Length: 245
View (cartoon, rainbow, N blue to C red):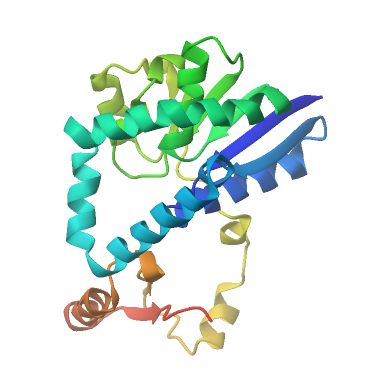
């Protein structure tokens, strides 16, 4: 039986959602595969994971511009070096789990776990296939550290693939698949019933609007964008997802 280990990290919900979707699909479609999912940062050090994810949440909510600068700055320079070096150190701890599980395939939905696994492969501590699921809509160099030891990259769009090929990634490694989504989004519904349920005009097009929750643009900016849609595209109907309880 083949063993698959899925790594994610809780910096935002997208990495976890992608990991869950992949886990569910493999579990339901492959009977000869043993698959499990692990938060790589929580496994390495729970206190560090708690502090860093908490800092990320607060920065994303209260200082999104600052977070944007940190995100951009982590591609090169001091921030990039700190991240790269710290992931090398943390890889030693993650290696304990990998040696215990001995996976045939590692699927990573976060750049940190991709870096750690590729580093261990470089040092010949690990012999498995590494697939990185890039849960972004544009290339970021943190995802590509150790790319020589990554067999597959799955990206969201053709522009990302082109950027990666120009960066030096082999074209044969990069697959445009979109970001993994829950199968809830692929269920078929009868349009007429949906329109009736939400009291919509079936002759007009609909915009589904949601702002990403606590990791999105923030309440004020989200409201401004929604108001702009209402004013600028009056011929459309807008269904706004306000929040979840």
